[in-house]
Image (cartoon, rainbow, N blue to C red; front, side, top):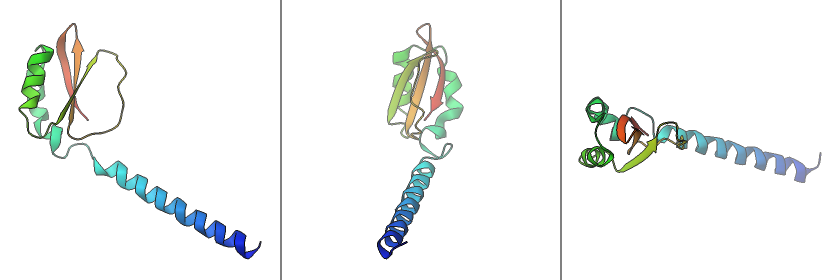
Length: 101
């Protein structure tokens, strides 16, 4: 193997290590259960049965929650974790559950 190939391989290994380190940092940045939405999880069962509008109004009064996502039962939603986001799961037009992330 020539010098150029060895340098290229070292450079590729270094780039791969940086990418892996960056990915690990991104995954731990929003760990479930820390602040944001998770600070209010004990209050979420009280929102069950409310209308969508009433539940959104209640969630908007919680300072750690900046985004509210609404989904119907069985609807596909992204699985990316966002600690400041609450997800309302509706069934028959009423809140069934509230989840963080």
